[in-house]
Image (cartoon, rainbow, N blue to C red):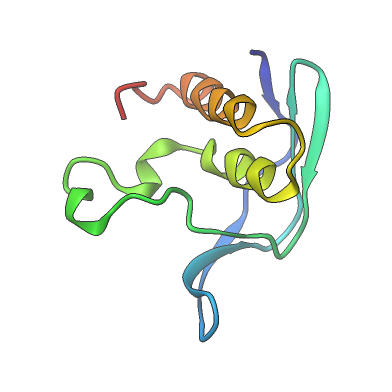
Amino acid sequence: MDIVYHSMLVPEFVVDPDKGRHWRLTRPFEFSVDGERFVVPQNFWTDFASVPRFLWPVISPYDLGVGPIPHDFGYFTGYANKAYWDLVLLACMEHDGIAVWK
């Protein structure tokens, strides 16, 4: 998969009484997968990656680069299937130079 980021990722950490501790995008994030462009809207919420806290010394949710944002967005929108977005996550990790074992 060919991954291109067309804008900077600008999240902010927010504690919300309904959603708990998450990150919220302060502006849209644009990326493309094999030439198809996607826009994650401003105010989109993410936890980056659902990694149990006891594993954080080995791999934290923030160790996976930008990939969790497109992954969460794809799961949320239902565009394509989950297997597709899992591959997008791996392709983003490769693009960001993150070891795939993580």
